[in-house]
Image (cartoon, rainbow, N blue to C red):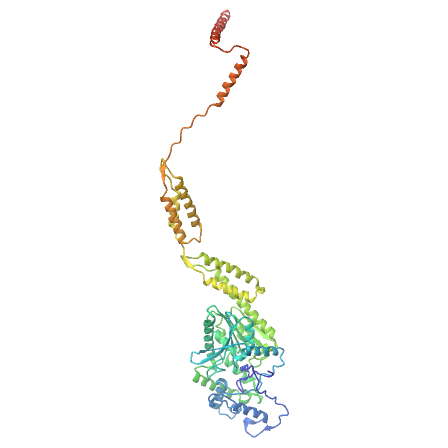
Length: 599
């Protein structure tokens, strides 16, 4: 694989748009001073051309492979100023819009074999040719059978859909397929309508193709599941295709659009090429050959024929108008040495984008469509970082969604699913907080877990606690009637049920079944309270006055001391003591009376 066909397609006019990544079958010889044989027959179409140039032009005409021979381009009519304007316009129509209408392999994109990272692209193509692929098909809205290569990447829930350029095929997706595969993506590489294995006659530079890609998106969702994430990547015409697709109403599964060297619109590109691109071998621009008026008239005829045959106008084929409607994250990549789709076209595209997140990257020295061959590291790094940012944006969105998730009025989340969501939210936030230290796998896994936790949250009606509260109030107010009391057994049973009921009432996650059960238990305990007559307390036996007994004992002790050595206190002795006492009292009274009288 020494030479590449980066065919600048569109025959003499749109050669480069093909982004051909096929191996060259024949490499155009540079016209040098050695090519001195010049045909100067007086026929305007041949004036100034060498024999070698004429030979290659004739080969281009003879090798055209249109299904209908009438669709093959007549190169001589395109480069001749003598071609009637109607015929020139018709040749332009075939050149621009008809499949396989020419076969010009002039190496117009230049030799990239000396590019710094050319070897990496060769390895990518070798990988792509060897990895197992599945061919899948679908039918377009207008009945065409479309074909694509599908590469499954384990159990990945992510898919990159890669759009090739003009006059290319899904084999041209090799380098982008390898990059996304290494990032964990499944790969879908369609053949655009009227290219490769897909059916179709007319090429619309992304406009009709945008509906085809909407169909591929839906098919990938059906293939990998409703929770799949999809990135759209396109190069050259493929870049215009994904930009035009991005302006449509797409499923939320589509997470980002990445375009590489796409044009603002087909009319802008045709205008630029007509004035700036020198026709290979002839070394003159179409403007120089035909003049502005003749050129514009021919393009107008081609546009009218497209409208007549396909119902599409060149003016509709606008990438920038579609970009204005796309709020998805978008990455704009362009080589800063692109003179086919001029580098400056990326600026209005970027400015027109209202994307929630967008970035513009210029690859140093990159020509049209092959920037990866000139700075592979920067290209891969920018795409990887962009996708990581987009993926964490998704994670942040789901964290916000999960945090703010509320049940519908009158409902609540079940305790189990609510607890699971809380756990996953905590894990997700910890991964997000790691920022660049988090691996893509971590981000992807926790995002999927969070999406699942949110979708699996179950609602249930908020339980009614009115009856339970009434039962609790009734139990607390329970009182036996006068003269009666509750039996210890039934009173303890009520106390136990009341405690259980209050615990359930305080539990915010209690189910209706739990509430109903404790309500029933508490009411049953209340209804089975048993009363018995109150038993009077027995009259207590008076306690002996131990203090008085002690005093008496003391008196006895004193008397005993006084009587120590005396006879015992008999009855006779007691009578004598009484007589003596009376006599003593009489004497004292008389003495007192005498003394009073003397005074």
